[in-house]
Length: 434
Image 1: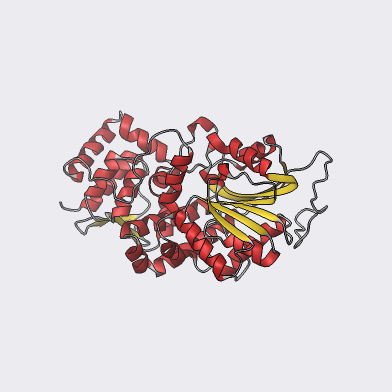
Image 2: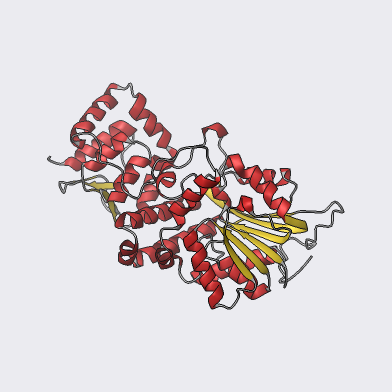
């Protein structure tokens, strides 16, 4: 095929109504589009078949995971330039493919089908989640979803998370390292919770045990951490044993809904509530409220999304649902605080740290790129491409304020009204009981 890139560029303009903002290099070596900057490489016509079969996010994602499309140059710049097609215009593009009536668009589609080659499209990459059935957020389905994401391998995660092994937004200061920023985040959580020696802390979604270790080692807290991932639990238990803290920290493979040994003085939930889902969020809030003693504090650290004009129109991101966080859901921060209040909590502080997550993700991506060959050996080249795209695209989303992340501090205030909180907001003292 002669000059495939020019033909693709023209067809994209006919279908979308605007020119593509990046240069294209096609499988025949031809190039078209604005000169300079990064290049979107279409290595195979199979990529086009995937996009025609699954317009929106999923088709391009499958082509990316298989390596049928790639980027030469700055991945962030390509994602930023294409963000209008990938996110803001995603619904419009899908409607154009399925319900088109414009004769010019019909012709463009027929031409694109001819270029794409014989049907059907190739099967999805092996890294894609198999189709799920049954109600959302049952214990069985949640466990399967968590294991898909977190049981990829501890060594794989260590390559990009670094020694801290914290898989949530860090808390940055000028010139700090990733490890310092993650330590500062864990310490901020402990101080907001007012932890002191002997306090019982429940760490919901404890991951590889970093929060539990910090709270026990630095504050003398007695910690129970729960996770649904066997690999995370094994890793966390070894870390705890190596540091001689088995008398203070217990790690359980347990659903948060099955924890019944309250009361606790404090609860931390860091990057876990995104897995709960709208249908279970009130149950989540009620359960944590019941596990706290009167005056106990909850620190809920959670990614949020912008509210939709019509909330019924919200849909889970196709790429993330298929490859990263099956069944994960984001909610506006207002809905989160309202649900916590409905459960009985008094919300005392909300801190938005959106920019901090963009910085964290960019550091993780740099680590993954630096260890790409080893990461591929531990998992698969497709899995590395999944995580690279997911984290880079998420960084752009945080930077553009499409999503945010918030620390919500809530108290189970007793009937007396004595919350135990400091009089001045955000004077989080170390080891302060109130």
